Image 1 (cartoon, helix red, strand yellow):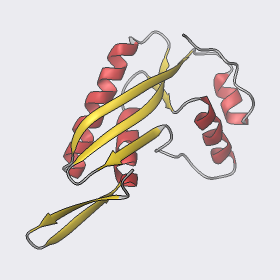
Image 2 (tube, one colour):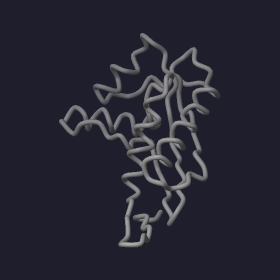
Image 3 (tube, one colour):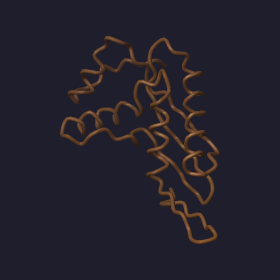
Length: 142
């Protein structure tokens, strides 16, 4: 994974770090209706612990990127709200990430790979367990 993206201009260079691209992609993914959370079970539990100790929300949770000189690739995992068309949510996430990252960084997004790790059932104990850092119920769809 590259540490930064450097673009040479007429009067200097602009460097865009992997962190900037990852944060931009994470925020763009969360904007899509039907995305309940980013990250798999382990990263969601770590996020819950981080929030409990006052660490705030990590917008890069579940997001990894590779950034080159002019291009970027994004991999992310999401948890989708039950009842949503998963393939449509994934496509909307992909489109929003591409549009947002390209608009804000000027990099060409060559791919966005999405892994749907779980489905959120409203009223399930998943949220309470995530907040307490306790063991997940293990409910998922194969």
